[in-house]
Image 1 (cartoon, rainbow, N blue to C red):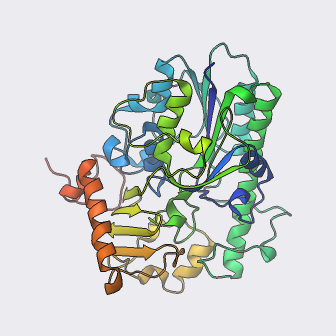
Image 2 (tube, rainbow, N blue to C red):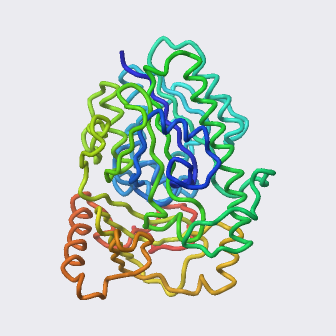
Length: 423
């Protein structure tokens, strides 16, 4: 019997939940992790929302499917029929969407049989609607995509359990009243996310379908703090990725290097659907049998547009991370960091005046925070040559338009910059 598939995607969460060792109030996701597998080194294809989701849901790089920026700013999929919902729907799955999808301004193009009515994209509203769908009668296997706005800014008002006095911001940020206040807001938001995950899992259990329902919980990219979201670092690209269901041994933890592009071929394998041509990922199935298996020797990611044009590409191995910017800037694009107390604190102290580096190389075991750029270190000269070659090869093989020069925005796109359109 083909399994049901539930794909649950949050906004701007990174790995900042308790199964990854962080002091976040997420007991339901902790229980979920213990019931399945946790991928400790999973990465998104982009540190910005629509490109990340488009890559996961098509199994291809953002630059291959047209999603070089945000869907609500004028970017769109070149071929919406490549979306996972279309592929599973054509193979006999009943497909449904609950909440946020952030890939198309017209969700009807994505092939869902049902778009469930919700009052908002908050987990408070989406969770119960998704749980109700799960609890219903299903004559055929279903694919349910669940998207919530949490933990995107603005954060909700912290409750009594989110006391800023006793919280700590991410390690690369200063420990100050402002950053602790920011974390209190995040704490309140991630509680809502955790409640929604719990509501869906409880519905699966009550319906008696846990043994034939694969549940995936992930997010689009890193949290919306300075130096995280919109950056091609572990803090910006690292994502939670957890699965439970048939064929998944409870309590499994994998340290393998994986990409969210690996989810599409994985789900095709579970659903017994022929994988479409052109998928860029590799099925995670071997890691479900042996978490010590090596799946990739490197993963890649990209940033082109967010609010402004900031074209960058990166390649990561277990040992090194290399990133290159293709637009030289004399100051930081502050619009690429969401407003909040942490950003305000840093901007007041000159953070935005610093010009971003155009080429970066980090030795990850010795510098996990990616703070010491080794591009000019002669001891790493051979490594730099190798990583440059890896990145350039990937860009050629995937026909990245950035390899041919600056990428203009599509007609009508709402962006602050970028090279002029031609023709």
